[in-house]
Image (tube, rainbow, N blue to C red):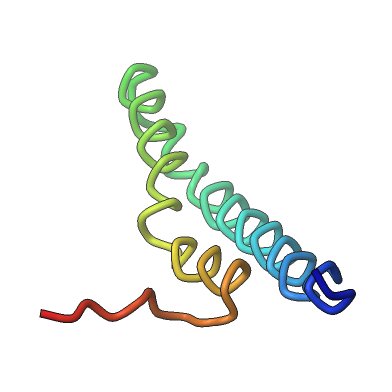
Length: 81
């Protein structure tokens, strides 16, 4: 193996900071909604916070970001049919 292949990629630390920024942004967004959520019954609040806690995984482009961090490409390998 050559020295160049053992060098860590700059994409991983940059991607890590982007992920942390997206999580912080999502947390601020959810916290800004808390004023109207507090008027709901306790069980509805709990269910809503659980859904919002999981929803950021689907709403934010984390899969593509993780792929870019690993491969340097935004799209996966193309399928040949």
